[in-house]
Image (cartoon, rainbow, N blue to C red):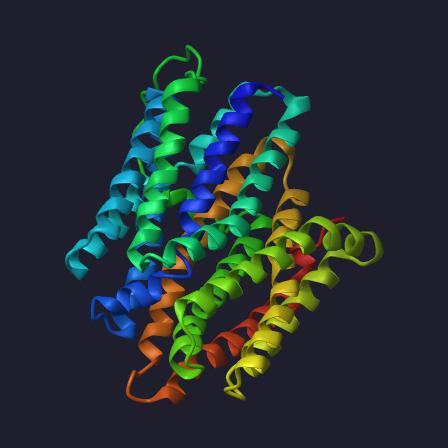
Length: 390
């Protein structure tokens, strides 16, 4: 495998680390600034919404101006944004930092374009496999690094994320050449690709999968925001124990995706595994708030993480099976865009439902996520003939 692939995989690892370092501390850090739960939900959403609009723009600019300059600008933006967040004097600065990180953080499309640039058809699958593995490792290591940074302060986690992004910036600057080649500049009209997002839903077989995955992503991000205030305010835990829980989630997810899913797909139909995973997810969401007990909550969410880790790889598999080789990249890009916007919607829905004066309301988003996931499962079963691979 070419050196350039290893370099961009290192960049992907850094991208994953810089995100997962922050996930366990974003809610308690926002509360330090006096933000309400609803305001903190916007803190979660603003990054994803900004990234949703920025990702296709960054991808198009990399086609025109080259991969290397866009990666440098993107990584520099992540460094500055995390420094701003870690040293933020006010909540306004924190929101501005998260927005800046979002609009400059959509470089995964560029990283994947580099892999496509430098690999031939035979090596490409392995290159993208390494890219995915780098992200998975980041989801385990990120919370571990975050746990160490929190021993200093919550803001220190942002500063560590900035330092890691600086390392990726140095790697890109010092070792990654331009890979776009000497292609003529594009003269077609510049757009955000929003029209393609709309028409994507009409694509035979794939459109329904994109819709299902968007709904799955929305219900999941309702959970990812809601369970943090529930864990801290109802179960009376702190950011340290929350981070430890994220570490366990990451380890179980990687183990299940690496060893469990290949074995399951040899014995069971892909659709059956997906339906089972969604059914378990809906039941666990509904069961989480029933008993406000720490041991119960930890055990049931660890059980949830095992099945939850199956959902996204299975959706990706179904999309891949329903398109030809020439459409793979475009369809995966569309899928990523739908997930990005769902990551912006879910936390806001959860934030609207909770009231800090009434601890019972912290369970409402979890109940809603469970009910909605069950409806998504019914939709997936009812429409299965539209996307079931032959």
